[in-house]
Structures are given as structure tokens and as C-alpha cells.
Image (cartoon, rainbow, N blue to C red; front, side):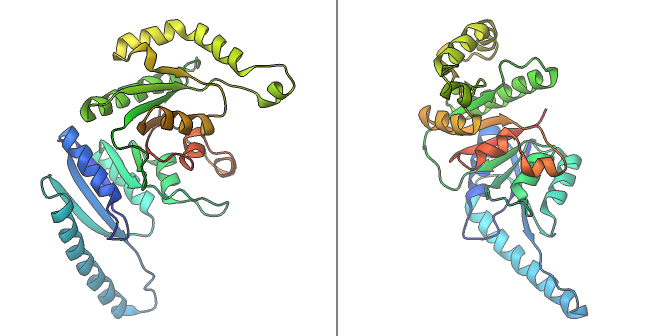
Length: 286
């Protein structure tokens, strides 16, 4: 049976990730494995520290059991309460070992130069698809928006396009909604301001060049041609705008991980748009 790994919210009053994962598990006939993480620095307490740790875990086990019995009453699930400080490391190891269908987590999308949230670590490093669930949603009956790079010639990115479309179509089929496809061609605001480039010209040129590709993808994935949308601009601005315009509740995007200081300073499109999207975001790696 397909397995969905859920990172429970640290506050038991919040059940955003668990509820969304429960909905997906029913749609995909999948089993949930919910993990509650907790950690506290008990160094220096000796045997008392170990006793505190055991007591805390036992209490959390009780609360987790009560919560899941209520939220996932009619679904198949297992759960763990884990004492761990490095959540991404634990999740990545689990994903390598058990290969879950996806990892589901409520989004907490803050990052500074010297602090990287669990969300970003998972997006960059987790080998499984990561679904970052929005706490506040725009839509109640959402479509799925797939963001592609339709003009790429790089084999890795071409394969990623198909991976994104496959995932988006699976979501749409199981949730009984439509797939919308978005492509954002490169557009220079500087050239526009200098009167050397028009946004409409960029879009028209891209549409003309991409007609054979769009026709092929439309036929292959059974997506109506009118559901393919080309809008020039900055992806981190255009994609959230497209999600709102086309009633998308889930956005499926590809992410290529970076390492080192460049990862902090530059980020990728998936990370840049997360702060503006008020939808669930499924991130896929090549």
C-alpha cells in the first residue's frame, strides 16, 4: 500500500497537515504514517533528564493517539513520537528507507540568512516529493496548477516536466478537478522600460514556438489546449497570480537543489514563490 509520511504540527491544536494528508490518503487509497517530533535540551540533568524525557514522550503518545483517533477515524494510519532535534535528517533517512509517496507538512515559510527552516531543508534535500500545506487556502474546490519550463532543452528538466505533469494529473484525477498548465517565459523589465521589448511580443513568440510541444503534451496527458497558459514575467509573481486566477489549490513545481552559500542567497523558483502562494505546493526533484 502507498505510504504518506506526515509531519504533525507541533501544536496539537493545529491539524492542518494531518487533515490534508488524510484527504489525500482517501483519494489515493494510501496509508498514513504520522510523526510527532519533540526535542528539549536536558543536558546536565543526569538521570532526572532521562526520566523527564520518558515522561514527556509518554504524554505525547497519549495526545497523539487521541488526536489521530479523532482526525483519521476512518483511515488507516500508524504513528511515532520521535525525540529529535534535526527533523529534516530524520525525514530524509525515513524517505530513503521506506520511499513514501510523499511527505506532507504544514508550511512555515520564514527564512533568514542564518536560519533555514525545516520547510526549506525538506524542499532542497528530501528524496521524496514534499507537499507544503497552506494554513489558509484561497479555494474550496481547487484545480491543480502545473508549472513547467516548456522551452528548456536540458534532458533533466524535460524529464522533470513530465514528472510534474504526471503528478498533477494524478492529483486532478483523484480529486476530480482539472489540470491547468503554466509557463513563464523570460521577460526583461529593463528592456521593457527602455522600450526595447514588449511583454505581449514575448508571449506571442513563445506561444508560436511552443505550439507543437503544447499540442503533444495536451494529447499525451489529456489536458485541454485552453488549459495551457503562457504569461511572461517573474515566476515568483506570475505563478501565485495564475494560481489565484485559475482557481488552483495545489501548485506542482520542480525544484533543483543548490548547495553552499548560493543556496541561501539565491534560492530557486520553488522557494521564491512559496512565500506568496496561499495554496498547497508539491515540490518535485529531477
